[in-house]
Amino acid sequence: MIVHLVDGTYELFRHFYGLRRFNKGMDQPFGAVIGVLNTILQMIEEGATHVGVATDHVIESFRNDLWSGYKSGDGIEAALWSQFHPLEEALRAMGVVVWPMVELEADDALASAARIAAADQAVQAVWIWSPDKDLAQCVREDRVVQVDRRSKQIRNAGAVREKFGVEPLLIPDLLALMGDSADGYPGIAGIGRVTAARLIGRYGAIENFPPTVLGERRELALRFKTLATLRTDADLFTETGQLRWLGPARAFASAAAHLGDTRLLARAERAAIRAPA
Picture (cartoon, rainbow, N blue to C red):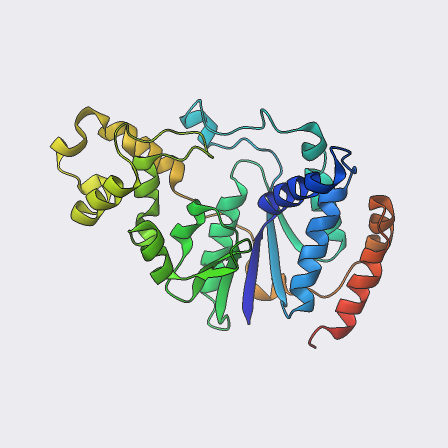
């Protein structure tokens, strides 16, 4: 079996701003939610049997205490933010396992789920559906890969090395040095991606850098590395079988009606009939 792990927060953003190209700013209350549900149903129709979706139930996490500029919910449009919790409720009603994260982030949930699933010998591969460069650190050869829906690329360890110039396990070191504007930390001044990859290629992890390389900036780099390192210790599930999609719950009929798209129910029911026994 292949375990499919989906970044629900990314998908919600993707659908919300994708719809903006057509709705002329007239946002439908649950337009992005409906889009994500249809995406998950498409995955199931195309053969996905074991699916888990991680979301940011709140945007802030323990990382905000470590760096004041770390990303937060500030600036998220109300029309988008109001769809986060309805998405979690709708996915659950549709029968999909959801991990709404509070102290940790959705990426931490995906990293934790990948670790748990990859340890199961019955699992052929783990696919992480997100282009987020943070998640490249979870890639393990061909067993745990990253799927970029936009470019339609499946990124294994070799592809990570080609793209970033470092091994997947050293992605946190790379991001610590070069910074990550999406997450709100600047990295070390004067060190870009190329220089960061060259330093890591020569010395390895930041902890192994000679003292003269970073000087007094070493502690700051290590703090950024903590920000960039995904947690893998979230207690999400005990058996991979818990991620198997068995069809929508009865509550999905009212959920689809509330969202304003009853076609979702019919599509989910058809998918359940066609799903492998």
